[in-house]
Image (cartoon, rainbow, N blue to C red; front, side, top):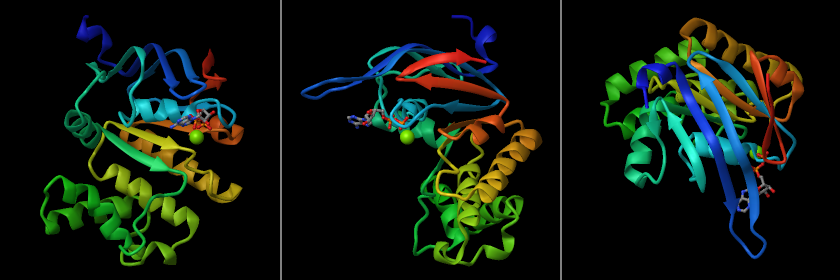
Amino acid sequence: MDYALKKDKVIELRDVNKTYPGIVPLHVLKDITLDIRKGELVSIMGASGSGKSTLLNILGILDNYDSGTYHLDGVLIKDLSENRAAELRNRMIGFVFQSFNLINYKNALENVALPLFYQGIGRKKRNALAMEQLERMGLADRAHHLPSELSGGQKQRVAIARALVTKPSLILADEPTGALDSKTSKEVMQVFRDLNNDTGMTIVIVTHDPTVGAATDRVIRIVDGRIENNV
Ligand code: ADP
Ligand code: MG
């Protein structure tokens, strides 16, 4: 395959299928074909149970698929060892979740610095890089506060700073505004928008909320495990 033709595609899925095994196997993703280009801010929108998180977990190399192909930055993601998957994930992808997934007993700075600890980076450099991302999120003055001392919107901005600290090429967010009120939700979407404008980072946001979808450049609709339209 000609890499030169594909290099502007961060994500390329072709006929991806996924079934959860069980007494009654559940065919969750059905012939998913989609491309996401470098620098896009896109949403994947669908009702609860439509397969959004399953799809995002595959994109994030957190889960496998049964058939089809997934290329991430031109690299075929299929049957990877757990080590190789972790290596690609840590190098290329930043994750943001509905429930923030911050560590309660660590302050904002320590939470943001944690991915760098796993990369073996020394404390001084870790803290400097983490502070840089907190500053970008307008949270420098909250660096030494625990998550319990932060509002929902602040917690999500800490989580976004943590996703950014390893300088990934792709941000994957699963219902990032799902736990926030509508005003805070708008603010968090503006954070993603600014990030996309300022850095050209590719951002994929999974949501069931049409106002979140409307705040992205392109909405990919998923209905009962199928891509319905690719606007
Ligand atoms: P969404 O994020 O759009 O709400 P999910 O991808 O979480 O949808 O789930 C899609 C379907 O797959 C649902 O019916 C859900 O119950 C089922 N499902 C999700 N994860 C698993 C799993 N690990 N094992 C079995 N079924 C699952
Ligand atoms: Mg989900």
